[in-house]
Image 1 (cartoon, one colour):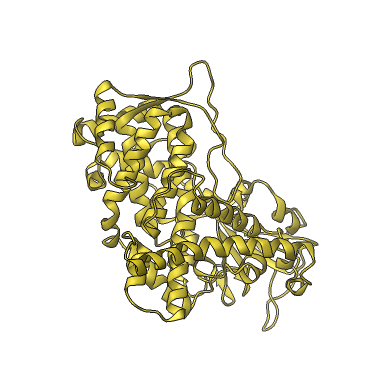
Image 2 (image 1 turned 120 degrees about the vertical axis):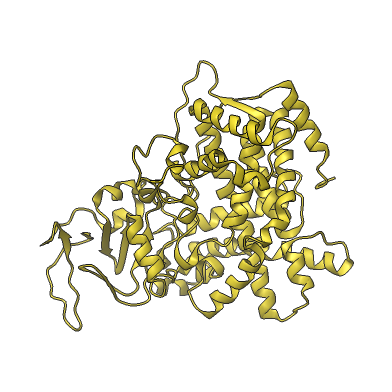
Length: 491
């Protein structure tokens, strides 16, 4: 474990009321001089550098303790086996207390969190999500048709489809375009939360007493405006569905199911509202980012693309589109999707917004002492690199007996707080990616060199890029058109 201190590393003895500030290397105790200040951690643009500094990296300063966990084995030991200690969230003063987002994803681990969890798991467990297969396939079919007609806008079509899927499943709403008010509110809300959760974004997160500052203070005005957007995003769609249920016009959706269950208890209704909103908020950008990364990877790896297309042609044929029920029979396509998640995880520590945990009590791990209230980050990027030649895009790595860890077991969270929407997300990603593979050839633009670059936002995705997307054959064009006529959503 490397120890970084904002002022100095001091030697002390761990007794009943004292702790030892240590750095252990090769079975001997060492005391490190100051190398990286804690404040540098707040603003460093690239957390990948921490991967090279050891299995565990500890930082301390400004009254905060931060632990970065860089290996899957340590993540499993701490977050899974010791879930009772490592399942709490940090206290986010600005985005949590003041903006009101101390629900579901940011809620402390406990009875209330478990009640919220029951709602989302009941709606999104592996059996329950089967009810939405056809809707996901229909919306993917619309995307395929849109890409055929305007391939230069593929990025917009992918983003719209990811939003449409969760908006339709959550609230029964079909969005006609990215200017839909629900989508615009959600996009703004996710940006607000992403910025607010960045360490150091608000001084009141470091000095909590500042949350009592008067309303005219600039950051309080900013928080007030942000809370209005967040509240509208969370509550308005649910209120609209309630009105539709009363009028008898509500479409099938998770919100409809919860409302028609008949429990009007305000506390239950509050949980239901946030449960559906959390699906919508969390499920759009991650799905879109994964599919964008896939398109980039296919443009850079034509041999992988051809092998996946060959598998689809052999298993599915050329007279229909792949369906989610085909997934078990398409092992290479599944491996390709896993490799997409591994090659560039959408939530990586370099973007600074893999949502961390907070230790509920003092703990020890090997020779290391981890104080209560330490902020603990699982370094998803480092875990994704625990495989030979990690920068090479190679789905075959997941088909052998020595396959690395399945990214679906860490890219969507770890331990008790793994995202309950992972099964729905896996189906959405499969419907979109398998449809694209079956329909199009993806390649770099002739005469241009395609270099993969990714954003540093809270959900990391490829920076805007151009590529060539063309139909595989005239027969595929006919199939795309025919499948689109079978869609009933949005008609």
